Amino acid sequence: MTGGRTKEKERKLPKGCYYDKEAGDRAVRFFEGLKHTKGRWRGKPFTLLPWQKKIIREVFGTLKPDGTRLYKTVYIEIPKKNGKSELGAGFALYLLIADNEPGAEVYSAASDRDQAAIVYNVAKDMVEFSPALQKVCKTVDSVKRIVNYKNGGFYRVLSSESKTKHGFNISGVIFDELHTQPDRRLYDVLTDGTGDAREQPLYVFLTTAGVDRNSVCWEVHEKAREILNGTREDPEFYPVIYGLDEAEDQQDPELWTKESTWKKVNPSLGHIIRMESVRSQFKEALENPAKENTFRQLRLNQWVKSTIKPIPLKIWDACKGNVDEGELAGSDCYGGLDLSSSIDLTSLAIVFPCGDTFKSVHRFWIPEDTMREAEKRDKVPYSTWVKRGFITATPGNVVDYSYIKRDLLEIREKFELKELAYDRWGAAKLMVDLQEEGFAIDEKEAGPGHPLIVGFGQGFKSMSPACKELIRLVLTGKLEHGGHPVLRWNIDNLVLEQDAAENLKPNKAKAVQRIDGAVALLMALDRAVRHEGENGPSMYETQEVKVF
Image (cartoon, rainbow, N blue to C red; front, side, top):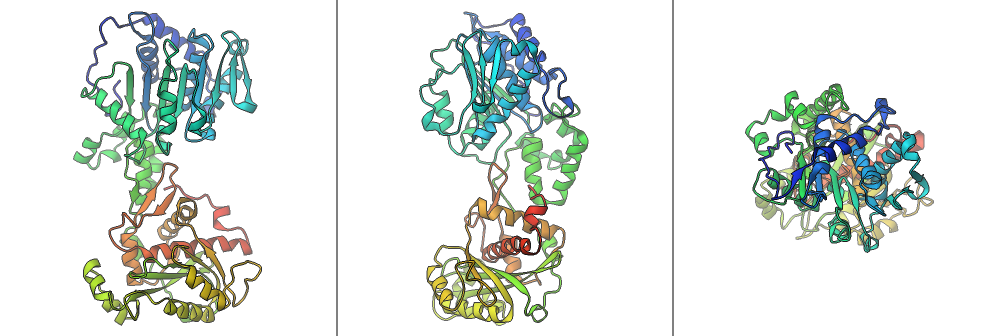
């Protein structure tokens, strides 16, 4: 199968295998007897597009000498919104109803039950739109199951817990968004021998490209790619890849920007997908470097890196603004403290809500005895920054936390510090010291002069909203940072990791140098944004959290 720009070398069928036109046509007739269930297509006949028709004909019409299907595995990797769910639902219903399989057992699987239910919900609606199918099928929505009265079979949704999936007698699996699988356990459980008792089990994998090249999806992707280019053989594996070829993309850096490329890798463009929608998302990708990764992955089906550099310095510098600590005296503010390692840079960010904008001030500390060594290692002028007052050098070879406590107490006196978010790692002693100075660990105890101490997780769940909000504020010019040179260096080093669900978090391991100030800013910004709820709904409640 030629997939967009993924070229396929001609594959010869194994000896004795053949294409049965009637079997292929029969499957096409079944699919086209179904109806669309979503949007402007709802209720209209499911007329297969050429690329879909080719898949259906070849998968169901290519037979072995004994008349059973040749293909056991179908791998379809294609950009989002090209009709994967409808195609998957059609596969599920055909295997349940028209495959002549007594006691058929067909399953939907994905990274979680909600994702797996997407294909099921389409299939259920297709049944409910068809009087003919309702005569042989019953949908049981409470358990996400469709029962076939005639052959005693069923189609149902699986949860994601692999340990409960042993012992199935599978005749078909529709595995949605394989790239979101956190590990290979569910894949292995569903594919290792579960269909051995069936004459022609079929495993259908539907996915968009991912970001993790150590995943089971990348493993299957590579197998599909190698079969397509003729460097690997597996006659029972049917590969389809529509995506921007990595080698050609490297040869022509402008290839991803061309509408001719979009059309090649999106076979449903102009039918299911509107060109205007893709153009709009492309425009956003040009304006926002963080969105380019998402456009490439979801619209061009490229395997992108899991890390991105989100904020160009040119855009960051334009947000310098006017930050005067004297003018901010007495103002409400929120802190973020990244203690990092005691032998390295430690950072505090203070964020001030100012109408629809935010201002930030920053403090940094470094051990005096190791500063020169760190200067050589990191190739930045720590000693100059210390002389200019941008960093405080504390005596000794580790950061003296008493200096941090002293500065926090001064900040509490100068500003109305409401909350202090902190990374729990290595912070226990300092937090105890702050409690002794009147900082609160319970909201009931917090108030003027008693800032609330808030532990802040460093994973996707805690960090993603703040990461996306920081990018939005910088791009719209609504964060003023005063041009602090140490923070500028940290922002330039900032690398964000993106998971399969497009959540973001800072990745210190993959950052070339220090990002402590950026991490502190993210924590402080998160608390400041959430605090808006006290005087009205917060940004996280009133604005869609942008997906970059």
